[in-house]
Image 1 (cartoon, rainbow, N blue to C red):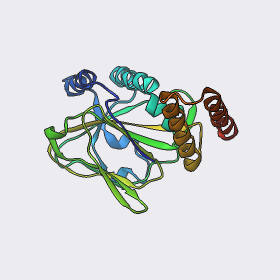
Image 2: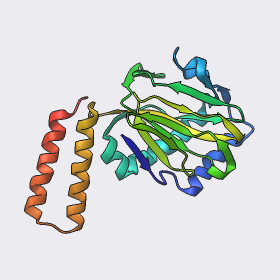
Image 3: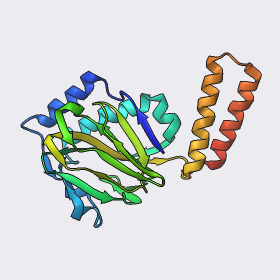
Length: 228
């Protein structure tokens, strides 16, 4: 899966988050504090201390918008979302090719999360920096992602990906991981396509009885495949 969610944050919301991250009181730490043994050697960025009040407040803004976004809910079917992390790439900073760890402990909860999907929320306007593209390797090539401030990209956590070196300016972003109700990628994508079809047929005012039957089929599959 490679899913773009446009305008997850409005322009005003993205600007407000940037102002907080650019402020003198922002508690930046070395980004390697949350990297595993495989990622740490190739990770060179800064990160807001995830135990800080700022991290929690900004993270709540992102999670609230995720819960309101119909496209994200339909495509991802989230069960648990890792508290969002906020990072900064200045000139010369990058994150080399890596895969995300399969399981992450959620700080302070004693809970663990299976990383089915990874997400990057772009916070800086693309014209404010150069480089810093998110590059996701796929079976048939690669996708280079550079989105507007407030746009989100969701991709498989098992995919090889990297952030290219920033050559001008500063790239601010938010990253997090999702454990889906549906572990299997192909099953999740089938449900997404079925849900989109139901929504489209509803807009076209198709036969109500057929729509109910189709919705019943969707929920039967969801019930069959869901994992808690």
